[in-house]
Each structure stands twice: as structure tokens, then as C-alpha cells.
Amino acid sequence: MPRGFLVGIAVLGVLLASIVGWAVSVNNDLVRLDQDVNEKWAQVQNVYQRRADLIPNLVETVRGFAAQERTVLEEVTKARASATGLQLTPEALNDPKALERFQAAQNQLSGALGRLLVVVERYPDLKSNQNFLALQTQLEGTENRITVERRRFNEAVREYNTRLRLFPGSLVATFAGFRSKAFFEATPDAATPPKVKF
Image 1 (spheres, one colour):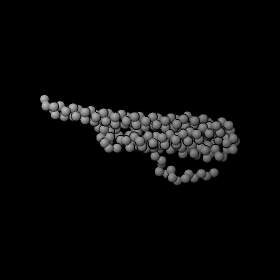
Image 2: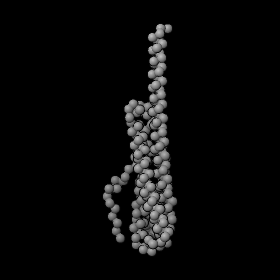
Image 3: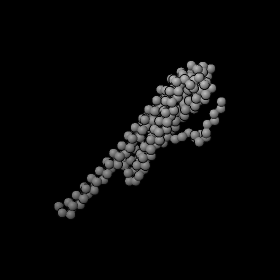
Image 4: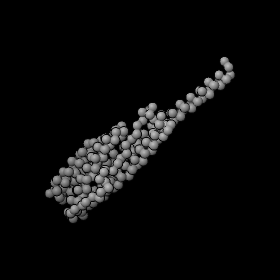
């Protein structure tokens, strides 16, 4: 065999090994980013679960003071059941409609909680009850955690989706079956300030 032929085969082998190594590296990076998105989503669900766990205690405390506010208490209970009954797996994060349904259930619960807190304003004894104050503080802290975790989730989704779309890595992503993830978005009426009436 001519020496040039062997050199050509060696160069081709090195080039092929480099391309395969690059593709494996891109794939591994996408897997890491996908897992990061899934971990961030799990944390979002964790803080939503914390909120759902606090609600029965809050409702029972309010019920003791405001028995005549049964409708609002039932709304909160139903919204909690709806929100906790709708779980979104990491695989479903590729479906924007599934994320939208999850968000709608969580927004319904947030609205019901808001109405419950308006009811609380009518009961000065309840507002000074230590159990209620502790629960209200925990719920406020949980709402803040939800905001933080949704932001972290969106950051992870942005990083993943960006890496997915960068060329030439997008070729590996398409071949390996990676799909973009949906962002957690605000509701359309989020820009409108809530109206509170007493």
C-alpha cells in the first residue's frame, strides 16, 4: 500500500473520531441541561406541594372564626384539590399545553387564596390569632419560594433551549430526539392589578 493512502486513512480516522467525540460531548451536554430542567421543575412542584400542604391548616383556622364564609372556604378546598390532582411529569414539559393546564390550576388556587385573605380582613380576632399569623407567614414565604423556583426553572429552560438551537449542536439534538421545553409564563391577566373590595 502506498504511504499516502495510509496517511489519508489515518487522517480520515482522526477526523471521524473527532466528529464522534464532538457529537458525544454535545449529547452529554444536552442530557445534563435536560436533567437540570427536570430538577428545577421538581423544585417548582415541591414548593407548590408545600403550599398545598399549608392550605388545609389555614382553612381550618379560618373556618373556626368565619363559619359563615363557607363558599370561600369551599372554593379554596376545591382549587387545592384541582391543583394537587394535576401533576406534570418532566416528560410532559415538552408539551406547552400540559404546562398551560398546570399553570391554570395553580392560578385558580392562587385566586381562591386571595379571596380567602380578603375574607380574613373582616375578622379582626382572626388576624390576631397566633396560629393564623404563623400560617399566613408560612404561606407568604411559600408564595415567594414559588416565584423564585419558577424563575430558576425558566433560567434552566432558557439555557437548555439555547443549547438545543445552537448550530452545529442542533444537528446532534435533532438526531438524538431532544425537544425544546416550554417556559412557565404569567397568566394573560397578570398585568392587571387585582381589585380588592371590603
